[in-house]
Length: 263
Image 1 (cartoon, rainbow, N blue to C red):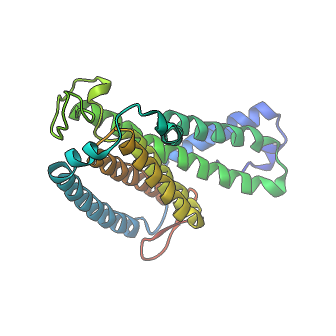
Image 2 (cartoon, rainbow, N blue to C red; image 1 turned 90 degrees about the vertical axis):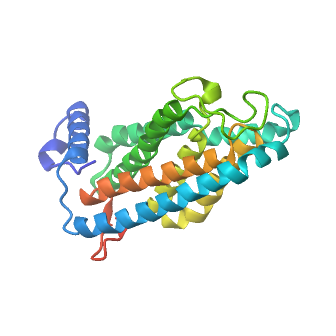
């Protein structure tokens, strides 16, 4: 979201709103402008490499040595006493989170043309960060949905036994949509994105993501490796979107070492 010119401020609400929307869309796809974008690319690339290698190793170890054991230790699916966990897990549901973030972006966009000049800049900065949060969750969620369909991993006890290697690729049914966990993707992407914008929230958001991930295990919706894979995809997706915003100088700045921080 960009600051309006004086000429724009003299126009009516609807023209201002339409101009704001078009400018916001245009700045998201414009050419990178940050002078330190090469340093940011190198730093982000190294982070992505190490996260991917470590996450892949953890997923492999869990699949071979722990997934089947862990789901055997969980309470039976549908246990009545687990109702608090079923409520908790909905806070990581991708549709709820994405619609909530979309509503935030829409509200900020609707209010911005009516705001006073003194508060306009702050509101637009918040709008940019809200756009980042929305896209930081949306991108990895879409990637995760494609992977679920392609991988076709059976959810815990689909087929009647604790089998960590029950795969039916390209099946497209809910029973074989276990890897990766969409709730984990959503929760970890949101946790990373919120922490990137407001660093003081990092611990609280990390606890939120871990709680959502744990709820998927307790409810026998996923294997441990599904949750780790989801968390990895969520963080990598949010990092990629942060880099996209930073090199266009939208809500983030890049220092000489390539470190990205919220503006």
